[in-house]
Image 1 (cartoon, rainbow, N blue to C red):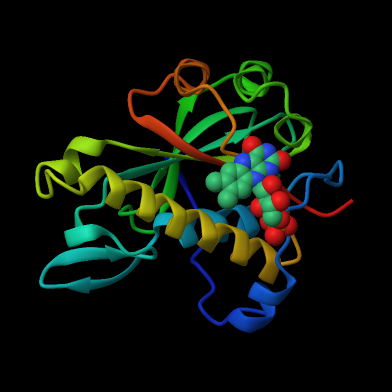
Image 2: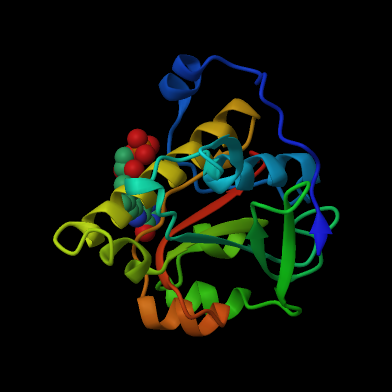
Length: 202
Ligand SMILES: Cc1cc2nc3c(=O)[nH]c(=O)nc-3n(C[C@H](O)[C@H](O)[C@H](O)COP(=O)(O)O)c2cc1C
């Protein structure tokens, strides 16, 4: 388990400024990211923000607080100053929050291929890969659960985009990928829903 620095809850820009400035950007500096920036992005997706009735509530809203998402980070070599190439699972409820190594070697080539060879996935120092276990939500909400999971992934991904904007990083939504190929590249059982490559601007 690799513990991450505490999240910054003060911020560097207003939310409105970040919303106004956000764009999909697909080119990155060839530089490793600071661990604090990576930690902040992961926290914004699924970090624990507070407790309610004994439940750890997270940074993105969730239908019935079911929390079906698992967030992974794919890092290339020198993608993040403190993490080697590989796949990491974000662990929101560790004290402090953390990432756990999932795959100790690069899966970048497979991930790029799974996303149809997109340069934005190839060139980013790291990508968040948002995944879900639908059953966690559909057992509570049989009729609308799948839709709720998709809505939740959108919330979590938008938080990542806005935190990137706030901290002077650039990011891009990536939805064009083969689900099976991403799952196989990442070695995951959960359903991949959203890739967010991010890094420093060129
Ligand atoms: C669900 C979704 C999937 C997307 N998939 C991709 C993608 O696979 N590759 C890509 O380069 N951009 C992708 N985009 C980014 C859109 O092209 C971009 O958001 C759109 O052109 C509007 O530009 P803006 O984000 O700069 O405002 C996606 C956006 C969304 C919302």
